[in-house]
Image 1 (cartoon, rainbow, N blue to C red):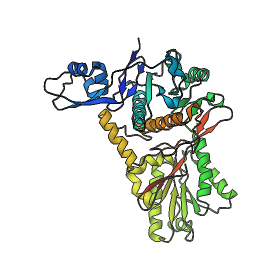
Image 2: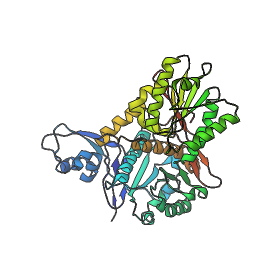
Image 3: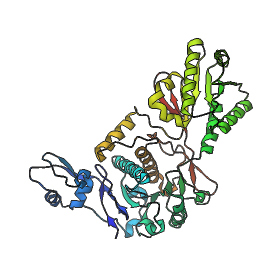
Image 4: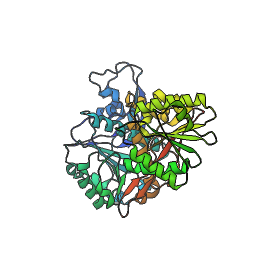
Length: 445
């Protein structure tokens, strides 16, 4: 039998369950300071809530054998109330809480579950932030692992009343959920890489993932425009396993079509030959035909020689998304050589918004975000914040197109385009620019 929980967004901890998990969001009625000899039962009774509601709002209470400490602060949620039905169903989205459903593998069994738990926590933090500007959200979450029959999940009466669904993670679950949202007119946000042919025919689908071919096409188009007044230098890295050959071939073709002269050289070229590839009258932009770390490091070494022996040659680089993983190690070089990295995500670790959400995550969940790129909690935050604001402002007519909403994402640019008569594909994209002045800017999205 499925269980219903009412979640407090600040301080919430995800409960593990092999069945469905549901949640309703709210603010808290008080912050209680624990006195000597007080118990969970007594505190819950004093505020008219259940022990379960108190524990869900304060995740440390869920730890086996946890003992209350004098002076400890506890968040006190309001007592749970069922979702309103009947006449309220006809009220517009802007006049009532938005009903958000999350259908992802929310468990601690494997990496998929742990990553989606962090993503879900980001969704909850977005809901909490939106509450501060007067936007209320009722969140219902179902644990839908890889072997689950999502059609069974969709049989729950609450599913048909949702205003938006985030999920699923697995392609094989798409046919059932696509048919469901089409019948009920519910926008479906697919947050991660997935094979979803339904996108071409179902107008309710929003797919955030872009294929590598689509990203490469956008990079070629934007690079040829952005660097039209530069002198491109394409460096052969001698990497027989590189997958970037088609990309650099398309880039060369794009430069040729625009009349941009470029040079070719190699990491194995003699120093004089390598130096001769660099123009002293125009800023040079260096492009490698491999994203491999060893090739990057070799190129940085060669560019150091150029900077020393030919200092009048201004240097920039156009890199690859993989290089974002090298920022901790090679970030200083990226700034020195004015590196542009095309990407569909980036969270500036020094930006106030990033630091604020990292701190909030520690405070709420008593642990750090997973050290991965992209960051899953920040991804969940951006997705939920974007779509919930859009639903609140435009209702189900929200199409996610660029310019509909003000404000920048923390990590993930979102700008959707309709695919024929079908759904919407995210075409958000940016250059992550490591400037010479040690600042990082996100441009072109």
